[in-house]
Length: 246
Image (cartoon, rainbow, N blue to C red; front, top):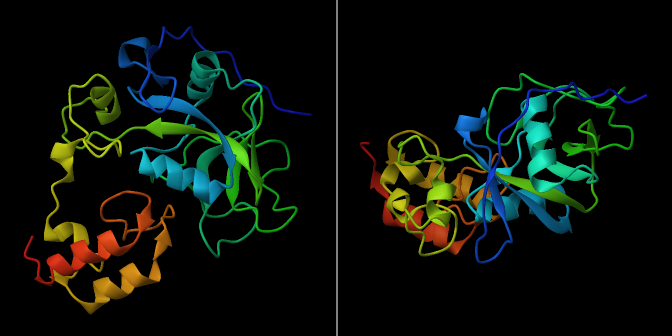
């Protein structure tokens, strides 16, 4: 028997803006009791790692559902009531099964859960990623393509407004189309100090090479945040080789 989502107070209207590559992005506005973040249903069904990589390439991440109100908003605003979709919940490698080590890709507190009865279960093995059922209940899942929901929450310039909305409204430039405002992509050696020892050296290079390929939630080597660790990131790291005082 499935648990039921509790009723919530009425949520205000969402602000929806289309962009060039997707029909609509929707904001859960602060003035309506929301968090100011932006959301989009991604209709391409892929495995969880690819879904998260695609979200990262757009400057976002798979959705963190941190309250019943947030799910209710998503249901009302982007019509996910009949969807089985990927979220940004994942299980840390080597965590005890089935319930240990679950977290959001953003590192936000894991202070709300809505698992289906008897879940997570790891019933088929290697069920390290979280899907959301129609109605809002959660399940752990392994491989297999699903649609997903992308969330944008970054405020890299610290102005109190989520960057993605400012990009959509042409208030901030994003010339490379990666969902990150151009003024926020100025790199320093600190971005390449992966080992955090105030030096760009072989330790950082080793970390980067060990993470070569599509970026995962725990990847720190995707320096230019394009969803992959590749030659661009290697070139950036080598350009800062040496002491890194900041």
